[in-house]
Image (cartoon, rainbow, N blue to C red; front, side, top):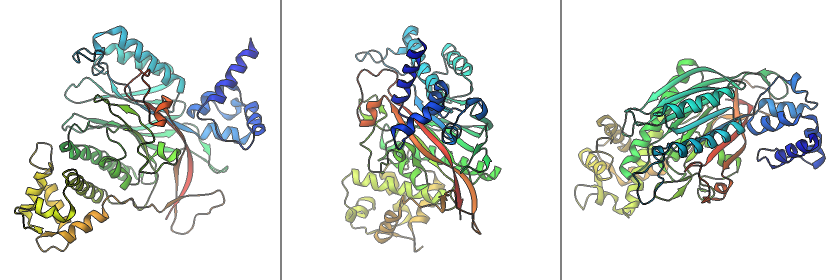
Length: 484
């Protein structure tokens, strides 16, 4: 019986998507033989720091550092029962009307999450308006070693966010709630965490990794006029992060943004975050470029379209991040460019379309205000404010002569959304800090997987019914960085 159990465990390990690469089958056997099976499987899959090294009885420094230093993060929009349609002919019938349906599905979700045992779990669309479901998540995740933080959307929307931090991995230094109080009643959670067990960095000193984690769920882009709302939401998150880091002197600290961003790699939010130095950890793990939007999906939306909208963003310490307000202005001009392209307006005809008359080759401030209204950025309740419009005008009129002409437009569009490289670099073991350099601890993406696996091929399986989103899990390890 014991032999059969060991063979089953070995089979599970070999099937694990998170198993590292080894130079030969013999080296894999040596490491596996040195590690107790239950500890190895759960720890490697999720980055779980179950016990001190002396208790784990590892015979290999490689195996010990591999388990101890890895942390993992899962993000999952679990589809609130109040939104899940169970009758395609009658959309008014929702899963929330049937306790047996939502109870069984959410239990399967919990089974998956508890099996993965990620260091951090970020959930969206948790049915916070149902006490039984909330208690179900709190009780089962709490019993499994997690500290739970929950935040409902404003105006009693019924759903919200839940972030769970595993006590074996992290202790929570600070927790903040962000209420956008905007169109869509969206919210975000910010957690500043520190690893419980120090780990050896580059085989030398023991350090405690600190990370800022954000969990959020952005507004769905029902039409193009909501693009500015979504940018506002991301801007508020980054602005708050910037203020929090400055307030607590935390500039050299990695940031992880998790959630359902309701926009793909082709969208303005993606480009905005990239311009601020964030990388999509899934794409980094698979060595995809920004143009590889077709390679994976994570959502089948209510319109039946499949797309990749769930991200775990990573931003490592950097001294040369583009000013946030500069990225914001560039993102707004990027929306204008997209709207004109969508309307099939050629660049040479832009001012004729935007101007007050058909012969205009430049815009005055009043013309510029009317142009913003034409592209759905002003004149709507959730559009650009008066102050934001004035700021855009100052950025548009580069030479300050009171008009915005074609040459200035080309310069703005040529510089928009360019990702500025950072001065921080990963330090190899032998590297020494030079004069003017600061040491920082960043994160390196090791592995990233989607469940169900078909999503990694850009497919959506018809038999998948846990949610209308895939579950994304990423494994990180700390790395020393030198910032000039």
